[in-house]
Structure formats: C-alpha cells, structure tokens
Amino acid sequence: MTDESLDGAGLDGTWTDESEWARFDVEPEAEESTGPPPQPVLAVVGRPNVGKSTLVNRLLGRREAVVQDTPGVTRDRVAYDALWNGRRFTVVDTGGWEPDAKGLQASVAAQAELAMNTADAVLLVVDAQVGATATEEAVARVLRRSERPVLVAANKVDDERTMAEVHSLWSLGLGEPLPVSGLHGRGSGDLLDRVLESFPATPREKIGGSGGPRRVALVGKPNVGKSSLLNRLTGEERSVVHEAAGTTVDPVDSLVELDGELWRFVDTAGLRKRVKTASGTEYYASLRTKSAIEAAEVAIVLIDGSQPLSEQDLRVITMVVEAGRALVIAYNKWDLVDDDRRRQLEKEIDRELVRVRWAERVNVSARTGRAVAKLAPTLRTALESWDTRIPTGRLNGWLSDLVAANPPPVRSGKQPKILFATQAHTRPPTLVLFTTGFLEAGYRRFIERKFRETFGFVGSPVRISVRVRESKKARTGRG
Image 1 (cartoon, rainbow, N blue to C red):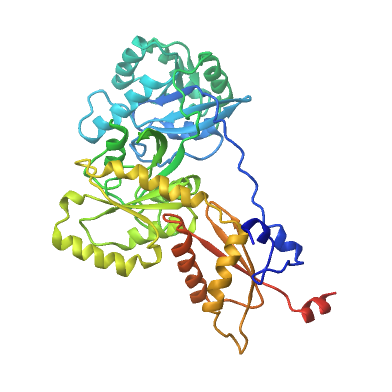
Image 2 (image 1 turned 45 degrees about the vertical axis):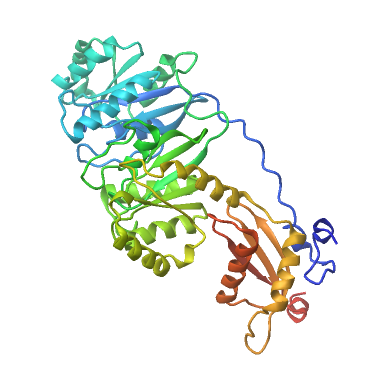
C-alpha cells in the first residue's frame, strides 16, 4: 500500500469516520511571494535628545523606537515601515549626530552619516526650545552639500509661544522649518505630507530583496559579540560595537549575502532580565527582541564559548523554542577557548541543553572570522526542517510500528490507544495525535525523539499535540 492510499487511514489501515481528522490531512500550498515593491527611505537625524525617536513613533503612528528621557538611547540606525495616505516608505531612526564625537559617540555619528548617504530624503530634527546650536549648523553644512532633499522639523513646539524660535531656524539654509510636536502630534500630518512630496519617483535603494530574504534574528545576552558578528557578516560597521555591554538597544535590520544567498539579519539588544522585571529602556528593548524573534523564521543564539553557560543563555534559547522558530546555536569567541574549556563546555551542553540536542551548532569567532562561512549551511538545514511536512500515510505507518513495539504507559488502569496521527502544520512542524486517552509527557518526548531519529528535522522544534476522543457515553449524554 502506498503513502497516498494511506492518507486518511488509521494506524490499523482502516478508514476513519471522524471529519475532524480529515481537515488536518492536507496542508495548503504556500503562496509564492513576489516580494515587496521598492520603498523610499527617510533618514531622521539630529543631535542627541532632540526627540528624534519620539517624533519617529508619531510619524509611524505606533510605538516602535525606544524612547527614554536620557540622551543617547538610540545608537544604531534602525529601519521601520511607515504608511501615509496610501503610500509606504521606510523611516530610519539614527543615533545622535555630533561632528566632534569621540569613542562610542563617534561610532553613533558614523551610523547617522551612513543613513544620510543611503536615504532618499533626510529629516533634520531640531529642538525648537533650544534653537540652532553649533552642532545643527555643522550638520546643515553637510546636508547643504548633499544631493538629497532635506526637511527641517522644529520639534517640541507644544504651543504658540515657541513659534518665534521656529522662524530663527531659517538661518540653517535648509528651507522652511516645519513646526511639530512629537509628544503631542502637532503638525505631524503636514510634515508627513511634505515628506511624501520630497521623495523621488524612483527610490535609490531597495531595502527588501525581490526573492524575499529569509529572516534571521541574531539574539543572545549582552556582550557576547552579536554586533561584532553582524559587522563581520556585512563587511561594514553596520552595528555600533563598544566594549561597554548593552550597546544595542533597538533591533537593527541588515541585508547580508552568505554563500550566494541574501538573508535579512536583525541584531537585537542583549537580554539582561526577564521582561516582567526589566524597566525603562531594558523593558522596551526586551519587547523589541521578543518581537524580532517572533518576526523571524530562524534565530541564531550567540553564546560566549569562553564563559560558562548562564541562565540568560538558557532563557534566550527557551524564548526561541517557545516562539516555534528554527534554531542555530553559535558559540562565539572560539579563539579564546582552550582544550580545558572545550571539555568543560561539552559537559555543560550535555547537562543544560539536553532538550535542544536537535539544534544546529557551530563554533565561530566574530573577531577572526573563524567558521563564519558555516552559518549559511546550518541556517539552510534548520529552515529546511522547519518547512518540511511528512505525508500522513508515511507518518501513520511509522507510528504503527513504533506503538506496537513500545505501547503507551497505562494510566488509571487503562492503556490509551493512538488512533491516528497527522502533521497538521509546518513552521514549526506540528504533529496531532488522536487518542483514546491522555499521553504522558515522557511518552510524548519519546515519540518526538524517535520521530527525529527517523525523519531528521535537525534545527527545528517539533510540537506534539494530543486530542483525546470523547467516549460514546460522553457523546450520548451531550446529545
């Protein structure tokens, strides 16, 4: 009997009469994605603490950028999708721009300059209550030499008393200053209209790939080298790297070409605390990281191989598994791992990561570039498993032999029977078992382990759902 003829059959090969089972039998074909059309890009720049992120949230109509009453919260350039009057565009929020910045602030300034160079239009945000400072005048000199349209947003205009300060911004030589209030929304609609008018007919650079690049979340605790790895992959200073832990706050999107294929990477803030106990910037950064994992298809959990596995490492892995995403575990700083640490790490993995033995593993060094080329094959393997569906007939034939050799344990004096099984979903692969009774958690894990031994599914979580058939007595009483 072929796999096709078994589709819809029970473990004993007989046809079932449960209509609920049949609806899980066929998974619809995924629609082919043609990719998003090109979108114009608006770079939002300015010195620290002029309210850029608050204004960005106002333009987006939702809270996306991390905002706190502390200068320098935004450090990387961060891209968000925006929509106004039926037209989509991309808003790039940047770190504060200081022309004479040093150290960390110099890296932030470089990110802002790169955003200006790759944008279709630039929005310079100035604190109208302070007026034009030497920093704004230096930025204006740079922007006047650029070939991009430039708009000046006079922010924090909360009432008419500030309007006199707005007119003084004509001195920047960038055209009419537009009064707005990122906090209260005043003038935001007029500003958005002017933004759309400033965009060219054809965007300079397409942010999304036409083939729909697979989405990869780069996650891990602070200071494990996520931004360094992203910079190594992109070949540019895409993310700010500094010896201070927790430099990245917002997720940062990057298109990365690995092994001839385009991927969309998201570098995220390091998770220090649980979301419930985090506060301020850490709270919102944790939410962004969680959202980045849920929006991704596969996650690379970066772990410092030179240090013992920590609770934060395990928690990040748990977040990825609970989100149902494909998983690659990359042990970074391998150039610092000696033989003693390698043996110790193997023991830690056997003890702490026993539940994710299926995850792909690769030992890398973002600093030296060691084994970074191995990431693409492991990502492909994990995603292939994540997308795979086993035909129902083949699945039931395998399960019949497994149950015959290893029946479920007796519960309350009765032995449950598995009547039928199907893989209801992919992304992640989800098995639904229709039974006459409850299956112990240990037996479900046994089924998953044997399922992996037979069908593979390396790099992808597998979920098992049990549906217990009602007894005839219960059905009769209900009727």
